[in-house]
Image 1 (cartoon, rainbow, N blue to C red):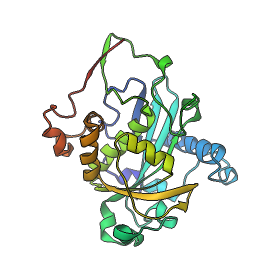
Image 2: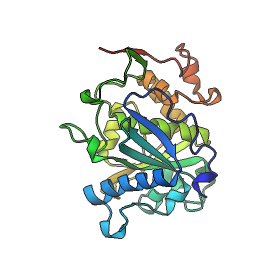
Image 3: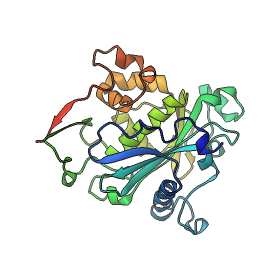
Length: 277
């Protein structure tokens, strides 16, 4: 299935939310996709050595799963590409991690690529943040918090999400796109292969994923994880409800999780007023 087969590719609501530093978009244009593949080449081939540079002479890292994926792109407000991730949708190809990871116990059924439950699963993969946006001391390979030198956009006040201290802002913005496009496309569960550092970082943000198998060597030591989106929403609302409201900001009303509608906050469009210090 090609990218154009997905209902929400390039959805006009994606990227709304008044992010002061970056624009986050779901892309399908050939030029934008080349930008996505170039970021991945730089991170996965050149910097981390997970893939052989010689296999990508045009410096664009891509594979057979890209045609059945939704691609997320973070762009700094000055126009510089900053990061990317993809949501691999269900297709006859299965999912990338199935060739590397083994699922166990309650999740052993995921070892069968023909299992009917997989029709509502998607895999989150190819998360990459440009080196230009992780050069400060303390930044991880997944970026860091907003930079002081970015400043706020012109104007005395803006409507914006205020992330918890030290939140990797590119990571959480890409997560918002992954969440929204999953909801729009009827995805009910996520699977992903994570190194422990990313797993711990996401836990600090309130993102809960369940270990679903043993550690393997797949772009370094990783472990497969699974979550239902409903469980993800419930856990996040219990710990960082403002973060869940940020993730849901811009969603169609019928897709907004019940826990937001019932918590008395007025739904995802009610955001905190932020004044310039």
